[in-house]
Image 1 (tube, rainbow, N blue to C red):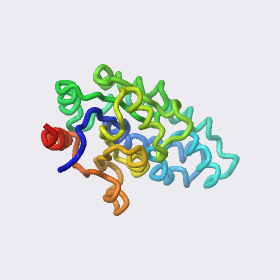
Image 2 (tube, rainbow, N blue to C red):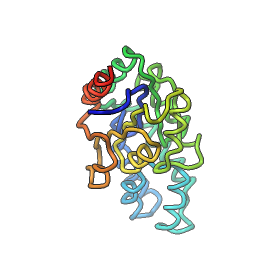
Image 3 (spheres, rainbow, N blue to C red):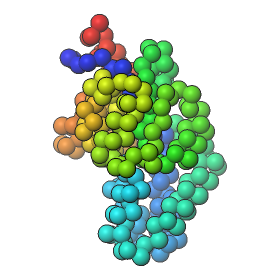
Image 4 (cartoon, rainbow, N blue to C red):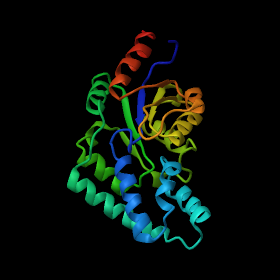
Length: 225
């Protein structure tokens, strides 16, 4: 497999590092009833991997200009935060093993999440993985969210690695699109949505779990020795 050495790996957060997309679905179902918008819970699949700028516009288009977006965000943070306090932050299979491997091999690490800084950092700390990362880039740090490449380009810049020498890990379509647009190697680890033809075209690889990424990086980097 001919490819440049992997010098950095950039992680999405929800659905990739943590099994939180399912919690998100439960939260949106609850808010659909609480706010009186029956169609709300169906919108989450389009919104996976997107930031607040996208969601605010999308909700206005689908649910109407009167949709109380700020109240929705406030309640989403409250409900999700309480759920994670009660149940803990569920780490995905292979996360610790992959982070330990990257650390041992001096490969830079970053997070690129559409979640805003406060909740993102809190979740990463609560999961016990904060100290593994060289940079954490959140959805409020770039004007354009996924599928625009901005957040991944910023993550690469923060760790001082050219995008061509970096790998991005994602579970969502919009995330894969962002990595591809950034000129990085996109690896999809499906969670709530399975890869379609577009995803197969834009990914360097599709893997079952984070554990499988170790062998992939080994294969790439050993071929460059």
